[in-house]
Image (cartoon, rainbow, N blue to C red; front, side):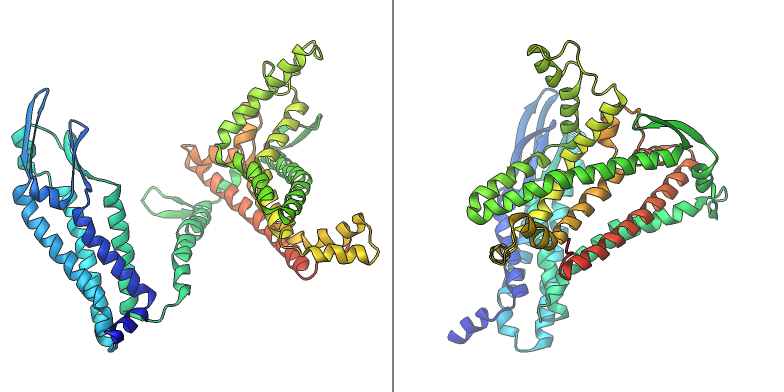
Length: 478
């Protein structure tokens, strides 16, 4: 017995996960996880056990009655499920008994894996086939008016069984736990949702579907973007005649630059104060940080419309100042071009501010307070201590904050579009309009523009990454 306890204590983590998944698979037989819907209304919740004990269901509806009996279906499903669950639990728990031989360990893990897969398949079959065609015909109902759906517990069961199957597969491949394996799902995510879309953008920027069904090389998207089309637009009150899409890019770049500068000017002092407060009194600093992060939980569109209502001619600002007698006429914040531009940048700064505060705060909170004390002891005043010690050491956080603000702000179009009611085009809005256009040529132009933006962003990130490495090597003495 003592030897068996020692074996269980020495079990690898994946074997414990396999046992827990098998145990939950067995317990789930007695937990309600099948909802019976009649006329779109849930009538009864079944477990496999209650399905066997109380298989008949009868109720009256407006068009007649519903009388169904699950007994024949429940008997063989219950028996088969309990056999699979008990077998999986037995094999999983007995893992230490056959753990001396590598071949037996792998065979045991493969057997449990097969049982987990069979349990998932049987569960899916139960959900889809519990209400048979004969039941629908005899009661004169459609599958929409009489059907079975699984509850949250059923969803959890499928997830647990899938995780247990992964543990079994790992045990069948090798018994040494390598935590690098946990990075593989993230790598797959990056490949599927980052690299593959970028490859598709690159492909669609240069190729379009031909009439015969294949693909042909074309530069039509570049022709749309670089054709000789100039517009007269206004920047800071000055009229400028410039290429249409270049003007849109400059406007987006202007928004991104000022948003980044505004976030840095407001965010760094806030992060510094929060970090100092957290070092003195940790709970107080954490609560203050939560106040700045809390607005991120609200939808960006709602926040933007709230700002629009605040700055409108009948909004909070004009109403308060009019009631106080400070204004004779409401200030047209959103109608005046210069004021609307300032409001847009202010709202974007407010929206992206937490993305600047958090990385700077995370660096400042880790700085040893003795560095500041040493600088003061060596004769530096507070300004010199900040410029020569604190700020250079916090540059990695500053650069990370710039990356987190500038990159999204460059292609962000919701705030300018809502505040200007579509009168100010941004590069993000242009890409969207191209992609949603029914014309194949404009679709390709949207992909070309996305590709050019990607190149610009990569160059910018490369520059910032170089600065980040320089800052990481000791900072910059100002």
